[in-house]
Image 1 (cartoon, rainbow, N blue to C red):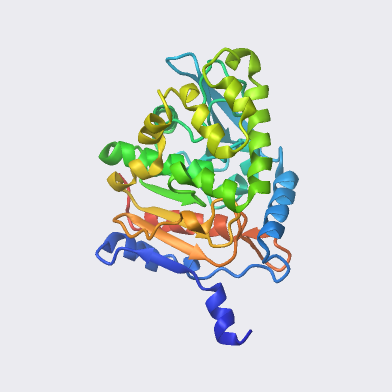
Image 2 (tube, rainbow, N blue to C red; image 1 turned 60 degrees about the vertical axis):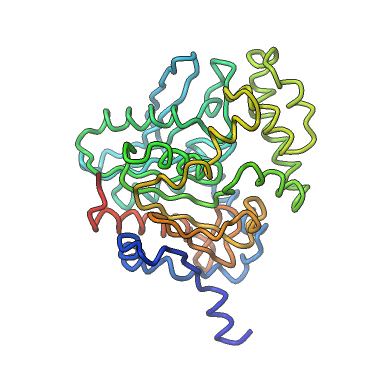
Length: 353
């Protein structure tokens, strides 16, 4: 590989609407977005994921959280985990994390510690069935915007001095961030957002994963069944779709039959209510999107030719799924670094509500 092709391999493609002057200024102020160079030994997508798991294991339980539970109108429970940050000023900017499909606050400890190190208050929103067992027979793999609204409003109530709130969605959480900022539109409770490794149209994304990487899809399906169905069998066993979900052979079949447990009449109604692509055009705040072309979970076939106001899409050749190791020994995360760089650019440019 010659020098020119090496530089090309490491350069990011940044898609942004040419008329969107606010986003163009923000991108210009965030030079770290322009290239990603993985460690020489960690270019393979599955090596990246293996290294990510090791990093998460190392950081597990290394952050102390204060937990606040919110009881929802239907009897469901969601949790807000606030990372211990006594060194921060009362008006410190806030970054709110929305976790992965079977994740929780403990799986985000590396990101949380990094945000705290950069003087941001880090908070994790745990969806129904994450960290706590279900208290009502309702859960949603992609999250529920009404729950997210309630949790963000609670965060604003807890930290009234903070004038800049932002949200970062990781994997499944990335779709919830976009659904939230799109559905809430001008009423959104944050000033900037980041969507990391989204799958975009969930009507096609799970089916595409089933076809492209059947082993990955099968392992993920087994994990999801254990995490949600078997852990909450007593409260879910009489619900419509429960038995069909247990017997589902593919992810696409699974997400269709659990639609009633997310409060939707059927799969079509679920997509209308919860598909991020049904809402994204109404967003009013700066939102950075990151995808890697070698992602084995949110695969490149899902990525649209997205050029829309208030969005910037960053594409890299390497990085895998929410991994993006950097540094000679893979000790850092380019994904974490550019996320905080982008949010700080938004803060410094005055993109606040």
